[in-house]
Image (cartoon, rainbow over all chains, first blue to last red; front, side, top):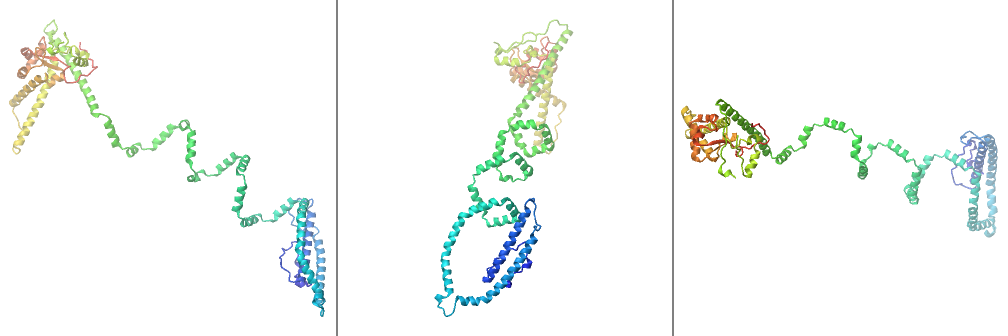
Length: 352
Length: 180
């Protein structure tokens, strides 16, 4: 094995292990190198986890421990010595392989030996036999694992402080980015549709309504909403207003709550009634209607007639009095004792 | 006052009730000097208006006959008096014969009747009109006469009576003047 071909630069290692990049090994030697490196990586990781676990016992779990755990240096020293030894072993193994490869090749394919008797043929036969049996063996393992894994998982979960694990995971995960990533890969509409189809919406809403403090919620909403900015065109207000108006005695309400005299005063102050009437009223037709309704000539006739009649009656009565006064005066001057005889005969057609 | 003339027919009685109570007692009685002078004054006014009308008509005719030589007619006093007398005669005669009263008499609620209490005929109306026009002062005898008669009334045996019921002028109700 060659340490150069294995690409080992152990001096750059630290406690934070690099993310491994999977690269298929070029040959058997390199595969072995990778296996060794992987073994050391696993050992380093397990060691650090173990050291952190031991250090975390009895400590406040909410605290984030970014400092190096106690014993890390000792573990690094141990692993460093082991790595050096492994590197040296690897170099020796690579050298041995380089020397031994032709020997092994000859040993597997000795000359002058029929192909059927060569060891390589036996190896190939064993290989092909195993390849034909491998699927069955894997199936047996898979069946065994399928029956054992749930129990093992149950056992593992029981041993592990899952809450702590989740907490640690969440501490290191960029949840926002993860959620965005998940959402980008998910057909959200389909998921939502399936969820809605599966839900008993009525029960859910009833449950939510039971839990909600609706008064407080509505008050909050009303406080934060600028009602005047709502798009009233989207709301069919007519039935709502109708119902409200049906339940209200508006007249009584206005009479109780409104200072009507003040309102009327204000309105009258702002109105030019004369102008309004001139603009809005067809005075000509009104006048025509009134004149049609009122028999003006009759009124004039009656009033002037009664006036004239009253005047004439007064003159006549006064003149009768004057007649009698003059007659009495003359009669007294002439020393007459008897009253005048002024009666006249009734005309024949007036007699009964 | 003795003997009130009360109409006997229903229409007449209804009209009689329209007469103010203070004046009912005098209906059918001969009128005194004041009423008759006032009536005569109104008649004089009427005749003057008629005279002016006649003058205007005469003037218009004159203008139409000779517009170039037109001047307002200026009749002498004699012509004017004669015209007045003629017009007055015609006015009085027609009024008494047709209606029993002149416009002045109508206004004062008076009516001229003959000795039977009836409306004058044309002859008597003409005679009385001529007498009145020629002897105006005869009216003054009403004040002296025991029967409220003028000279014309005495001669022609006519009477001028209060008659508000049959006058054309409407009588107002409710006007109370003490007739005592």
